[in-house]
Length: 408
Ligand SMILES: Nc1nc2c(ncn2[C@@H]2O[C@H](COP(=O)(O)OP(=O)(O)OP(=O)(O)O)[C@@H](O)[C@H]2O)c(=O)[nH]1
Ligand SMILES: [Mg+2]
Image (cartoon, rainbow, N blue to C red):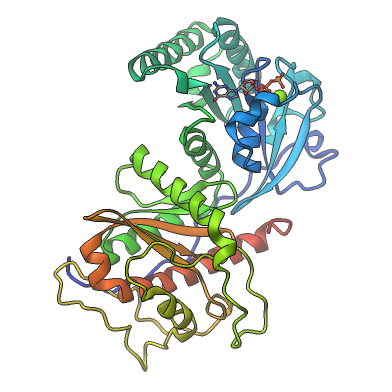
């Protein structure tokens, strides 16, 4: 790959939030939060899903979750502020204290291990209600508890269920097929549940196109084969580059972050003498990299982002043909993104493939797959590119925070 200059775009795509009705806003303390309504039959797994993804509960412990008897609302701050509404199984939506147009997304959970005719009828009934008040809502169907089935049987069941929903919507007097409905095969026992929530949340992120564009440019200029921007609290990815998604890669990245988080306290950096603010956790350091050169580089790299009018990127053994290019040649001002040490780590999965991690903000991390020889030959340049990527992400996050004052 030929080295190229990279100019990240920091302008988020405009996406004006829909204005809910007055009744929808009544009683809502924070009208800017995107609301997600989670519905389904009893014991479908609604609460378990939220506990595992948003509170880190172990999947086995979900066995002890009590049935839900009242609607519970929970604020979740990812790159945008969300509010999850967990409802008791089978609760009629008429019992909600707001109209359906208050919600951006409706997640409907169906237990694939159960006889699902009743669940499908409920779903179609719900779609008919939604159609009249809020036809633009995102309907996300989690076909859940899929881990116990064999791969073929699971896929067959998944396809049959979708066909049955489709048939019922076609037969319905309302044109329900015009609603935006997406099906996800999920289980709390593997990464499918994180992947599904990632897709749900991504549809609500206004600057998604800008984030994806930045990841694409970073990948093509740094020789990365796949990159994800993760929200480390929820293990959902808020964006990925455009290369084809692969469930195995995503699972590996999730596991890597989980491992790093488990050990992060052991590798905390002491407070930097050059910063006047404490280092926020988690502080992860290179725990797996065969070469021990990362800590030194980490310590200096973010604080020494040069103004490119007067300086050069760090040297890399860039005689290799796949050497990455520098991320930007624009003028860089030192800002808060530069004034602390950002953790980084890497591990060699196979001789040819390396998995690399960079902390981007306190909540977001970049995880990428890269050919080992490219990583070894050009690590300095890749780190250098990531500093520009980080600055662009900080700007986007700041813009979002200004729009959504209650998010953090
Ligand atoms: N095998 C399997 N079991 C699951 C999965 N997710 C949840 N469960 C189990 O499903 C049961 C019901 O989970 P809950 O989260 O309480 O279901 P719910 O939909 O919130 O139920 P209600 O609150 O009563 O409506 C629990 O025993 C969970 O352990 C999954 O992915 N696979
Ligand atoms: Mg529940």
